[in-house]
Amino acid sequence: MSKRIGIYGLGYVGSVSAACLANDGHRVIGVDPQAAKVDLIKAGKPPVIEEGLAELIAEGVSNGRLRATQDPAEAVAETDISIVCVGTPSRANGSLDLSHVQAVCEQIGAALRNHPGYHVVVIRSTILPGTMREVVRPTLERASGKIAGVGFGLSNNPEFLRESTAVRDFYTPPKTVIGAIDEKSGQAVASLYEKLDAPLIVTDIEVAEMVKYTDNAWHALKVAFANEIGNICKQLGVDSHAVMDIFCKDTKLNLSPYYMKPGFAFGGSCLPKDVRALTYRARSLDVAVPVLDSILPSNANQVERALQIIVQKNRRSIGFLGFSFKAGTDDLRESPLVELIERLLGKGYHLKLFDRSVNLARLVGANREYILRTIPHISNIMTESMEEVIETSDLVVIGNNAPEFHDVPRRLRPGQALVDMVRIPGFATAGESYDGINW
Ligand SMILES: NC(=O)c1ccc[n+]([C@@H]2O[C@H](COP(=O)([O-])OP(=O)(O)OC[C@H]3O[C@@H](n4cnc5c(N)ncnc54)[C@H](O)[C@@H]3O)[C@@H](O)[C@H]2O)c1
Image 1 (cartoon, helix red, strand yellow):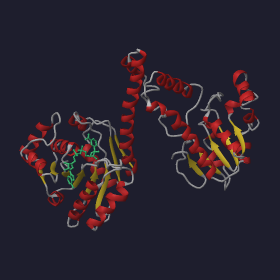
Image 2: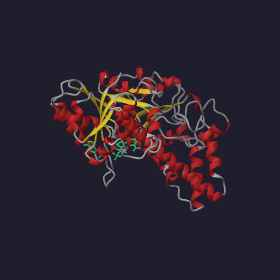
Image 3: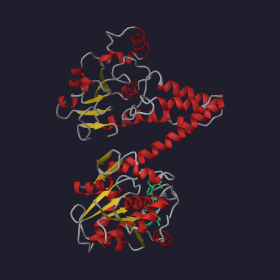
Image 4: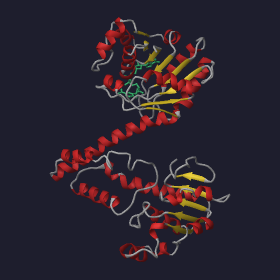
């Protein structure tokens, strides 16, 4: 169904969204304080260079579905949805400059004061989590004298287009993400994208805000990572493109959800050793690899973070359920849980450990030898009973995702605390007795 839409900000995101939505049959008014951009649209011309945009704007203006104004009040009065696409640049110190978002919310809010119908305000500009709650909503409510969810709808709908392919990306986005304060607002935004062949995800406003930053941080990290691998390759006389082509063919472990769940540090006999060897080799070749160099310090920081969370719980007896670096292995080499356990032992905590895969009685060969010779202080506090660990501890730490740990939260007695490193299924909300390492 055709909607009446105001688009605020006629830069890359705004002009592409305006042209594409008009092309989809909606009636669109573009708003920008810059007379030059508004005049270009009025003349049927694109204010930015993007493949396919000139044709869409010329068509939209000539069929009357797309027009432009410098007056936000005029646009609000004649529309049911306002989509904010103003810039959110960096300040000199790197912080986010929200002055345009704030100003446009004041303008839309003031115009909503006398708007008779239900109007939805959608923020498509990239904004940090909490901005909708702390800036957008209060500004709109103050300026309009109305309450969000009652007098008007509110949604965050991040944009994923890339410059140079923006029109194509509008029609084939990787996903559509809609954070909304209520179902009505979410549905109003979803209806704009119903023809797109892309996953549509409706979620919390702050998750939507964070997804955009997570995406872009990941894209930036991918580029920096590939460049550093390439720089090492060149110095070694290895074809970097052959390496990365093969790397990208692995959609099981490399380009996949694997390793992408927030949780505890990595460990084991390969990842730390191999990252160390590669960065040492890069150093010896005089190749700077700041991204690769930051991996092990970041991992060590995760152990530190777990330590702080546990120490802040103020319990002296601590039980670990799982302490090999992942469920189902008896390999304790470079287990970050062993590192954490050693740090706690050093601070004088009373510890008991259980891990079905690291049962000393059943262990043979190298791993038994490793425990008895290298970490004998750990073997002394290992038990063969999960129940004993739960019963004798004031704080239980779930260290890996073994299925037998999944109902532990339900088995705790009042006053007992739990720190979860793996997000066992069904428990996600931090509280007095349950805490996740990063959720
Ligand atoms: N450019 C991209 O590829 C891209 C992709 C995804 C998301 N984003 C995000 O989208 C937002 C917009 O990016 P952009 O590249 O289109 O910005 P841009 O700088 O090209 O355009 C922003 C426009 O907003 C206008 N503006 C400022 N105050 C206004 C107001 N009060 N009312 C109406 N218009 C106003 C400016 O005059 C300008 O024309 C940013 O938050 C950006 O991070 C950009």
